Image 1 (cartoon, one colour):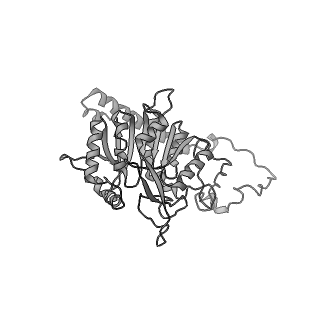
Image 2 (cartoon, one colour):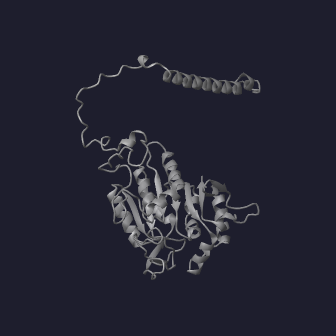
Image 3 (cartoon, helix red, strand yellow):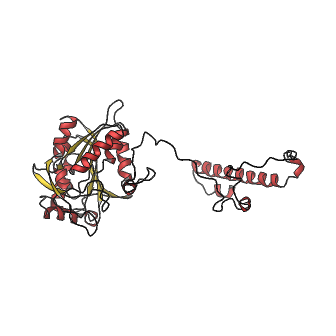
Length: 358
C-alpha cells in the first residue's frame, strides 16, 4: 500500500488508496481469525449437549426428515433443497392485476414481453410523475393505449390519466381494467390524426395471439393469426392531441407526460399536438418513432403526411417551440436530425423512441 500511495499526486487520491489498503488489511485480518478459529481444539469450542438416551423420531411431515441421506453431503442437489415458500393468498394491491388468459394469475403471459421492452418508458413516466409540483396532481396523456397497462400504472402512481385507443375492444378493456384496479382513467375511442375524418382500423381485440393482442395500424388489414384470415375492419372517428388535452385537462393545463404509440402515424399525431407544444403545455413526451418503412405503409393506406420530409418539418417546429429532441433505443441516444438537417439514419433502420424535454 505504501508503494502505491507514492504514485498518487493529489491528497484525495492518497486518501482513497489509504482507505482501500485499510479495508484490504481488515479483510485479511478477518480471514486469519477464521482460520485460527478452525484450528482451535475441541475443548475450547462450545460444549455440546449431552446425548439423549431415547431420542424421539422426527415428525413425518418435516421436509428435512423426508430428504434422502445423501442430502447431508450434497444439500444443493436436486430434491435436497428447501421447498419454495407458499404463494401469497392476495396480490400486492399497489400493482395492476394481470392474469394469464386461461390459466392462474402467476404469470404475465403475452404482456411480459411488453414490460421488458418498454421498461425505459415506464421509468421515464415514473420520473415525470415524481417531478410534479408538491401537492399537485400530475397529468398523463396516453395516445395509443392498447391494453391500457401504461395508463393503469400512471393512475396507480397518483396521476390523472386520459387514454385514447382506436380499437373498440381494447378501449373497453382499458375501462374494465381501470375498474378492476380501482383507478380512474378517462378512455376515448378515437384515432389520432391532424385532420378530422372517419378512418378504418382492424379490430384485433385483446385476445389476439399473433401480435401481443392488438397492434393494428389505420387502414391496414391484419391477420388474426399466422396464415389465418383477415379480421374485420371497423370505422372510427379521429381526434387531435390538442383537442383531447383541452377537453380532459383544460385549455391552459400542463401535461406532465405525453406518450404516443400509434403504429406508423406518429408524424400526423405530432402535427396534431403542435398547438399544445407551442404554448409549452407538455413537460416530457415519449413518441414511438419509425422506422420509415412503416410511414410508407401508412401512406399507402391513405394516411397523408407520414414520410421523412414531413418528419423533418415537424421536428423543426418542435425545436422552434423550445423542446430538446432525442432519438433513443436501448442505451443509445442521438439527435433526430443530422448535421445536414436531414433525418438521422437510425429513424430508417429501427424503431426508436423520440424523447421531447422542455
